[in-house]
Length: 227
Image (cartoon, rainbow, N blue to C red; front, top):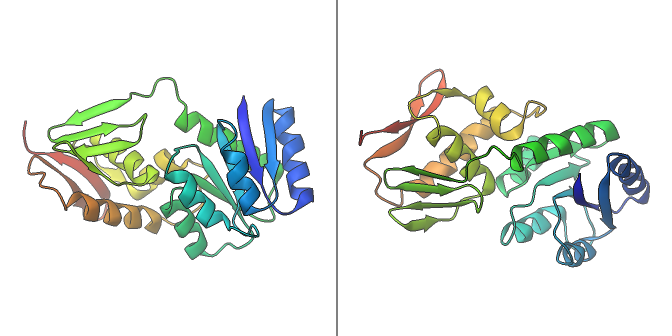
């Protein structure tokens, strides 16, 4: 099934998740603080990371930021706090999903399977061109007129979803389901936040042949002007 890293300072939580993961045929490695997690992550190629937010020495948010500088490995944040700020922050810095303690180990495994299906789908195309826009989904790289943008993983996935379906309007719920998965219980404002930041980065470069358009009362669409 793959190799995963479970990072949490709670020994009991690690042992429970480890046993569930082993039953599903994952190879499991563990760490108990932030420094150990960063060291462990560099030792091998992981297919996913279960990452506690409140790790000692280096917290989960900072670990996620550092991992995202070099890797697009799926990250599921584990947090003891359910505030929207923590959830949105985690997703904004590149996490793929989050789980709030206390949780069901079966739910964590279900979220892990869903993330891995989305990320490693064998039917996923790799490169998309839309006029001046180029998206390389495999490497999570986006360029406009050959100038590369610094986008988060989620921003790339949203742009890919919209650009792959030109002129099709996506509601916020549809975007949440497609990018975060149907098990995601977050607020649709997460989509608005990501779209706003994505637009801000896109607007730095001329792109008269396409745009991300808001359809009032419905959602968003990728509109082209060159055809």
